[in-house]
Length: 194
Image 1 (cartoon, rainbow, N blue to C red):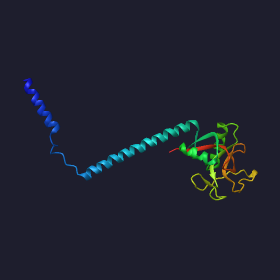
Image 2: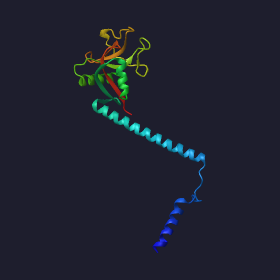
Image 3: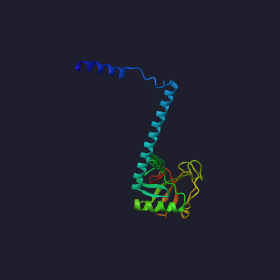
Image 4: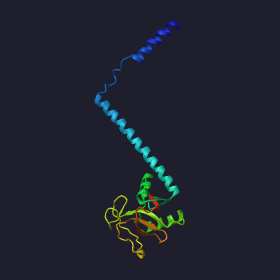
């Protein structure tokens, strides 16, 4: 009996593994195979996008824990002084930009946060400049700025081409000053909460 079982098993195995595809399966044309490949590639791309979005959210949560959350944004003061452009590049590398207050309430919140988070510091870069055209202030995304908080007691903005970047002064109750972009200052980054 054992001698008969081995050939039957071998025959069964060869029929299962080596037989041609069943006739009930439809043949797939090269066009259909290509479409299936594209569908798989599309699904993989969507998964990568979701993974990257989760990474961004996790990084944003970390920032929000270290900074403050207000106005549908997270803010983070950076205490290592940098030039305006280097400060903005650092904010971008972290997933944000230099903070740009859009109204008095946001400006006051930034001032209070900067005062608490970096005691003794007086000025912070914010994301406003007139580098491209003198007197035409834009944010770091080149969008026009409609809210200003100039320190009029110091005749700000000065209107000189040398001073093209804006700093928020904690000492002057959050008033803005036109400064030389190559000055070293601490800065505030903002991160939009999705």
